[in-house]
Amino acid sequence: MKKIILILAAIASLCACCGQTCPKSPKVIAHRGWWIHEGSAQNSLASLRLAMEAGFFGSETDVQMTRDSQIVVFHDSKIKGKKVYKMTYEEVLADTTLVNGEKVSTLDEYLDLYTSIDSPTKLICEIKKQSTPEWQTYVANKVHSIVLAHGIMADRLEYISFSSVICDALKQIAPDYPVAYLEGDFSPKKAGKRGYDGIDYHYDIFYLQKRWVEKSHALGLCVNTWTVDDPKC
Image 1 (cartoon, rainbow, N blue to C red):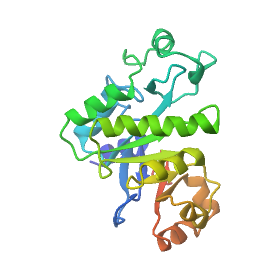
Image 2: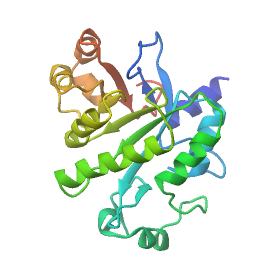
Image 3: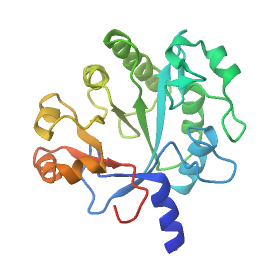
């Protein structure tokens, strides 16, 4: 059992709950799905399925938009030196194969799988920055329209982003859905004033700002941290 716990710690973020009463102990989120597993890969359909079958509290994934307005499940901003937002979806498919042999999936394909599996696992959806604030607002609307089309409600999905523009847009178009900010430069007070439900910062931030967890909870904000690869953290 100890070995299993250490493996989970190596692939997960810790979540202290957005949009709900905070638990007494941290919850484990599979970062980019459960990809440290045979036959899996980061942000693959296999990593999502494995995380859901294992019953993680959540499975995190990264989404961004191509030049032809396709929402793809992919982390890196560039493929072979070219920005993803400057590529068509066909170009992404032609230039990228995940390490388990899968092609990069669309958000529609990803959510088709998510809704087909009976699991308590929540989806933690990180929306990547786009080229301009206008496109960031557009992609926030586009992603949420796809989420709604798949019938995924606020108790099953949380949004996160490094972009305050995207977080602001989400709180306007999807006020019931938990939204947490990732960048690390907003105090709990500032995040709360913008209407965010939580802060989701690298653990180094909380070492530097030792009272931010306490202050966040006092304001009713959740606190998430990433990515905890060492049990000592």
